[in-house]
Length: 328
Image (cartoon, rainbow, N blue to C red):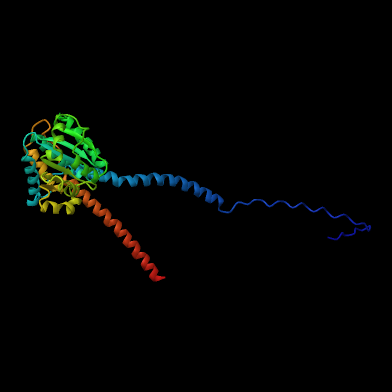
């Protein structure tokens, strides 16, 4: 920049340039709007999370309420056909043919997932054995079966059954090899008492019946394949959940099982027979409440509806994706 001379020929010094001011930090035009929106979103988010949790719990609560109501609805039961009643009569005959004081070996190896289906029939069989005057020795070869056995033995103890009527042989680890060991070596020296002394003499041949409460790990198949060739005169009866029916039904047809209760209707029919002639009190009394047919049917319908809704949503999503790919 050039200096301009004044009238006297003198040059005036240039005015000092102003120091550059730092640019002011300008907030974006929509900052206030965005901050306000964030606060609103956070507040609404809290409300949304709370309300979504409530909404998620409503179906579960409604299902529990409806199942509770359905359990008291009369008139929905399980049809008892000829095969169903015959299965109950077979087990009743196998236990009814025992003499008073006959030793019976009960293998409780149900699994916790399916035991509720056979609990009614199992407790009916134990009550039937007590009613007939049999002496029962309980053994288990699986961890879950042992947990169920402990609970059932404690229940019988609460009904007044002493160790002279129910002998706890405990848990035998090893699966089928332990089953073979029991067949070859007997109950072993650990059990004590007069009942244990009686069945220790001749091993498994001392027992007049083996009742197998089977699950997935140890069941009637193991007993037929491992015990029957070694103790051929020991009759074997079984109570199993329905999913094992294809596996164990051939053994009943061949006569290797003298009785088989393998479905829920068969278990209900047998339990009702025991309840009809049960004792009024004591270990032979059977007052177990039977499963509600209405609750089971309603639960099955709900499960089918959930599966259909899930499959329908997946199918609709696949159809939409395929349609969009076709359009692109």
